[in-house]
Length: 82
Image (cartoon, rainbow, N blue to C red; front, side, top):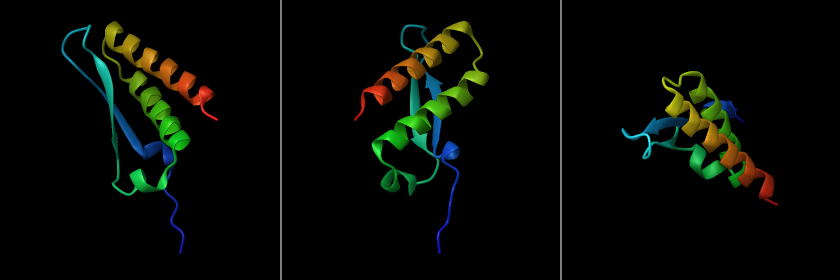
């Protein structure tokens, strides 16, 4: 039996840090089994999707800038992977 779970819910992103200079994006797997069945590219794609979902709920301009920068960096890393 094969069970298919949507990849878009595999990773959850959130921002943390109280100062504008220290804000960053953190990730967590939604379910424990995802961390053993995903390759690196799938993880980066899931992180990008999670950041795009997070961008919709950004409360301030500084938070939006942090998430947009994270998306840009993740896309660059994904493009450079073989």
